Image (cartoon, rainbow, N blue to C red; front, side):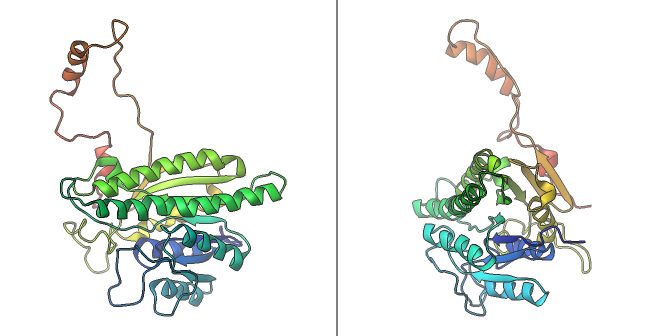
Length: 324
């Protein structure tokens, strides 16, 4: 019986470690040939800064990207490494071109690369804001742009019919529930959701789907965020392991998910939740032609009275980490 992704090729960005590594290994296990992208250079501990380096498809041994690619090849799969910075437009073009050169086409794009510059809004510098928006939001746009152009060209070459294309983007619960010390990160992750839903509508006619996940995983980038969550006892499964997230990415990349498009899913610790778009919680119509201040005070002030400070529209039962 063929594997779900046999004969398919995939790109995973930020795949040298953590969540991206787990996703790349899962796609390879399902039969895909994988381009492992991570611009991090060799060295003790590496870095999560992910900025300022264009890079390319030549990967010296010892880099995290090449290490993951070698791990895939050692298990009998096919993989190449790419060191480019996805936030650089031309480097993103080179990444997609590498997949096409190596494997004849691109079928799956998993955008995972990211960075953090945590700071309260009143302390955040312009560079800290720009850096996170650049790597997360512009990085997602860059790779999606070139992958979409590839699929559109393939569709035209095939007489306008559908082709196989899957995009899995990475957002965060910081966008859904807010994160006081991460205004740049929350904004970037919210932008990624908008990018994904727009892309899903634009590419559906070509047979391409685009979905976005909000994963919760213990990685180097999130080690401070989850410092208060206890690690499991020896032999127990960590509810924050990236291994809980990778199978969902594999599913969304597969033919089985052909009718899943434009969706937002939360995943962690053995749980997957499909989120609805925001719904109307309350609606008021003016008694006259135009609302007045007094009329709005009469209807809105009682509605919001007594609500907990900072309450958001996110579902608290979904956003609570399961420990069972």
